[in-house]
Image (cartoon, rainbow, N blue to C red; front, side, top):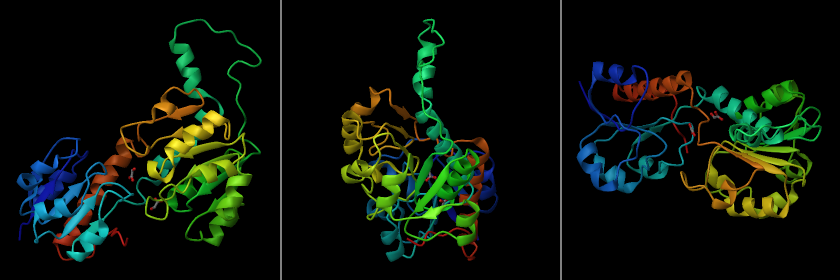
Length: 321
Ligand code: GLV
Ligand code: GLV
């Protein structure tokens, strides 16, 4: 029979129409998260809810939906916005969107590597001043990535896809993370699997790809930054709280590291004021998966997860958190 589905924010493509073909859908066609006071009105009685990463799914949210809820489909690979334990206790399946955003996010990670090492944000800002510049031997001089080492923290799909890009640009690859990557992939990348301290000490670029959880919050803290080379760059396209942002600002101010490229922040959309004024950091507004192709695939996968669970089938990409 038809179930009640709430899609809490704007989705591209025909995901909402496909849900409508089988179920009764309430579609909130907006990007913002829902103020807690409005949750019951929007959610009460739903069997399935589709959310994005700006929506917290906690006890308050689950209470607002009610005990009939079967599935929460997160339109993101990261699911730190969802209290997975609370969902499990209530028998609610949680799904995410791995795989479909791997390349888009790795592209942005490597874009940040190039932007940081070649000072491209600063360079672009210079042209936009409208003042003439002079070609000069040392004008906006950066460092080459070829022959240098990238350290990938978190050897999941996105970390490995970033490593592949780095390899194609002539970089050596170090990998670390909770789960050991496939030996075939390590060999293909000519990579070395090392512990975090070794990775931090030996890398010219450190790129963060670990999911956010209790074990990874502030994984890159003042200690970790102090282990990095003073010539090294930090890139983060995972989740902001994996890096201690205040410690990063202090490290940049002290010259402990050379620069950073960030797509994510500890308290989005708030950015530490100490970052906003620095020319040695590149700052993007969480656009890792922001291509129409990828966002459409993410919405489709979320819809497919909802349709599967409501039909009594296994979800395609359940979160096992
Ligand atoms: C984006 O940040 C995601 O987790 O999909
Ligand atoms: C996990 O699925 C990832 O894409 O890294």
